[in-house]
Length: 84
Image (cartoon, rainbow, N blue to C red; front, side, top):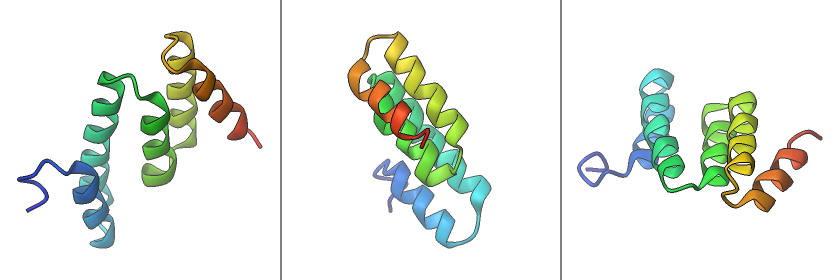
């Protein structure tokens, strides 16, 4: 049902519960791309960090948002908060 509603993050969460990380990450990547398309770099980075577990990619996205001047202050703030 969540697939039909395009609730990709929820679909990814369900695949995590089913221990299918490959399929989960496929749906999380869709969420990330959607956020990036809408210049929501902080939200995209949080999916990388909290759902996929890739802090490096999360940091890269935050830097990308800062360089693109899309919510730059929050991107930079989160970037430095993640370095602790």
